[in-house]
Length: 161
Image (cartoon, rainbow, N blue to C red):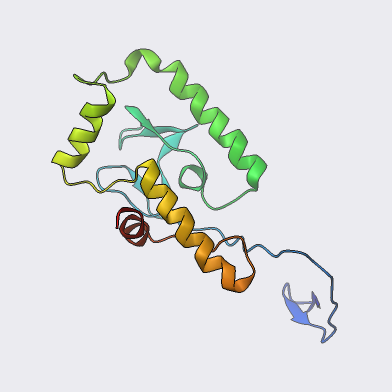
């Protein structure tokens, strides 16, 4: 436990209390990372936006670009805030439907060909099943359902290999 120290801070009391719990979750928040060609507020770690619509340096909405979650507002809030935040962004995305870019070839095969032609390593359903199996195997020795993988390259490697 802690108590106020009379100087605007806190100090430990030396007293400890134990509470039985079934799970503990770490919720520390993450400072956003800049993406190339996306306007970024490096002071707050967010993509510059107005209610989810990404803004250019002049403050104008960049058509087709949206942000939600912590990259939209910073590492604050709980799951409910994130859901409401996403609903707001999706609402604007739907309002803007008339300005959406239309690809020359929108079928699934064309999308996969574009990714392959550009050398982008992506995850298909069968790849995800490999990742799921690996995460479950990592969790088993710890008596957990799974241990999540977070590193993108590791996930792609496990999924595709």
